[in-house]
Amino acid sequence: MEYSIRQQLSQYIVEHQEEFYRLAYSYVKNRDAALDVVQESIVKALSRSDTIRQPDYLKTWFYRILLNESMNHYRQGRRLVPLDTLPDTPAPAGDHAGRLDLYAAIDRLSPQEQAIIRLRFFEDMKLEEVAQVTGTNLNTVKSRLYKSLRKLRELTGEEVST
Amino acid sequence: MKDPWQQAKARYQAEECPPELEFAVASALRAGERKRKQRRLIRRSLSAVFSTCACFMLLVNVSPNFARAVSQVPVLADLARVVTVAEYKVEDRDHLIDVRLPALELKGATDLEQRINTEISTRIDQVLQEAEDRARETKQAYVETGGNPDDFMPIAITVDYEIKCQNHQYLSFVLTKTETLASAYTEYYTYNIDLQAGKEITLRDLFGSDYKSIINTAVSEEIARRSQESDMIYFAPEQGGFQTIADDQRFYLDRDGTPVIVFEKYEIAPGYMGEQEFPVPLPGGTQ
Image (tube, rainbow over all chains, first blue to last red; front, side, top):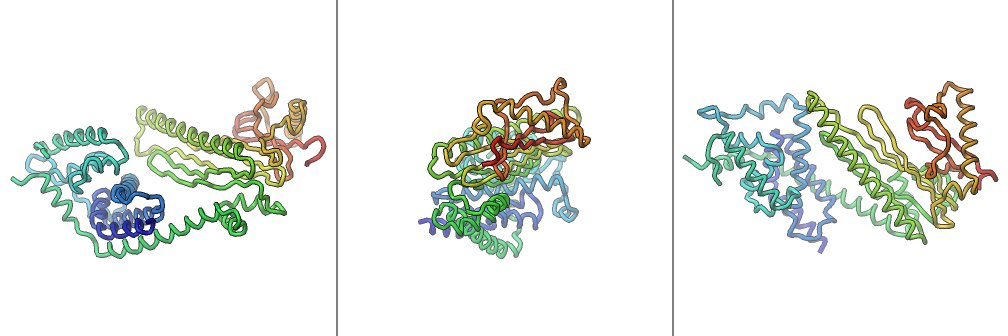
């Protein structure tokens, strides 16, 4: 049983590696750093795989590790910006009225808010799953989500309906 | 006009994955699997009672202090040992926390073992919580007084332990918590266990009912001697210096079993003198 959970985990990771990379990239905005984050998360997950008992939680469990790693790198990255990351981050594209487009506006949110938005809308997770990944309860996720959407509306000046 | 969410999502998904990704994932899977096996190995042999040899080797690897303590004991004390149960680091913008949490394994004294282990873990939890609160307050004060939050120096906390004495009679270890903000400050928690009796040792057990005056005299004499012979400076008794040991005075047993009285930094001497230790030989010689 234990063996099969581990196999499932490896298989899940291999199949979804591109999603992991994109989520990591959306935080660190740098190819090498994103690869690092993905690798570190996988090593962490595998080395602790003995602690998962429920295969149902594989996905949220792994995303939680990935998100933590991404945010750690993101925070470090804000303190220390190597020169070669600069070309990867073009100035936020402003459209006609100097307003941000939605994609760029998301980067202006706090890391936690970014997580909720990306998991919910880009990874199409259910709110319950988002709550598990972020380690909060459903109500907190909902209120943060609404707050983030309000902020996005202000940033883009558009009606960001979902 | 296209839905902005669809646009944003398309852009998110358009991020091209580098060709190295597949290789990176495969090698991470292998590395993770290797690590997992190591962890299992350690955990298993820690719980295996019979594989004393393997256990010994691994503990030597796990804890240099343990290795040092054990190497001084001719026969490996099999009644009790201290193992590292948790080792973790937290590194983020506001904290640099490094914890090596010990736990006690005592044969035949489960109550005592449990009590001490619970005490250790609650104490550490509390210490970390307090440190966290303090870090938050300090940072808030720093920012409110015009400091740049990005320049804030993270608070650094290290929790570690050292085995001071381990033989058939006694087990003595010291748990330390060091917090570094502007200057470093270490708190000591000492644990002394009489393995034969299966209980914690008190200074009264060691020196008899007169223990306070015996130790007070010894410490005062030593303070006088140190002040004379070196340029060490202690606070005078009327300035808040040493007068008497506390009822729950911290002490540990050194490797010969001699009790060593411990005072924290600032407790009886100026901060630059650091923490102060006074070995007080037992009246009838060491046991």
